[in-house]
Image (cartoon, rainbow, N blue to C red; front, top):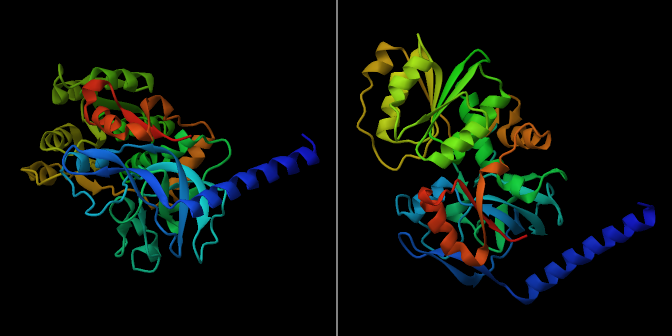
Amino acid sequence: MNLVELVGLSECFLCQQRKILIVLKMSRTMKAGIYHGVRDIRLEEIEMPAVKPGHVLVDTKVSGICGSDIHQYHGEWRQPRTKVATGHELSGVVVEVGDGVSSVSVGDRVCPECFAHCGTCRFCRVGQYNLCENIRYISQAGYGGFAEYSLLPASALFKLPDNLSFEEGALVEPLAVSYRSLLRAGADQRARVAILGAGTIGLLCLAVAKVLDFREVLITAKYEHQAKMAEMLGADHVIRVSTQDVRREAQVLFEPHGADVVVDTVAVEQTFHDAVAIVRKAGTISLVGGYTGPLNISLGAVVSKELQLVGSQCYSYSGLTTDFAAVIDLIAQKAVDGTPLITHRFPLDEVTAAFKVAADKRSGSIKVFLCQE
């Protein structure tokens, strides 16, 4: 391609962005999926948000339905009290920037972390910005991915390399969650790792565990389509919980001591007890699931086995780089491919149907995407 052709392409792209901005100025409404109560999300026309200082408006291309979105859908977690679109596993193109934003520009392809942090509190200053004292979650405070346009804090955005698709960009967020949950355990390559749960986070934990080259990786699955996906991703052992006893099978597979690390992605009473039972003495349990209520658990074995319990909250820095930057590199280098987990794709107009499929794993769903490309 010669210089004239390159200039022509550049001018064409800029023209497209100008057309988008003109349309935005003419019409300040957009389509969005809005909660109306338990298991009730509908497509509506809502007012498009004004771009505030420090924020950007993103033309949403792909948005994934997360487990936390399903908790909101079922009423287990609080739904927004105002008409704003939730959704934080997304990617898109910047179409407008607010005052004070210099980190991204119109035309940049981006994906966001699920929250904004202040950058100045005691946790932010030491790189633990996922524990920010002034944290603001996109799905509660802003206009997220289940809409034609997303209003996002510039501090939460990461640019996507040219070789990442928008679908890969929307997988960065759950992959970063999975990546951090394994690194929090502090295991080395000699570790035997057990992952409880084969939903999106569990399967992406498996994908990361294979890249980190742990000695042996076991995963539990409730549904057959999850088990088959785990086998395709290279799990050394898959325990089908509907027909197999987790503790008995893990004891045989990881004899004589047990798993060095257990990652619990399910966050229910049963899996916590399973984790304590199958982890070795002085082993580590990483808790990454979204708890919806208190558990009735006994901590006696935590003491007698001298176990380490670590929580893993979203993502921030793991070492000298952010979890988001690390997994973007893993995807760009083709070390991790999460796209096989995408089982269903719906247009935004079918957001109601998309949530029904995502909320019912008997549909064969793992990751459900709303696509606007």
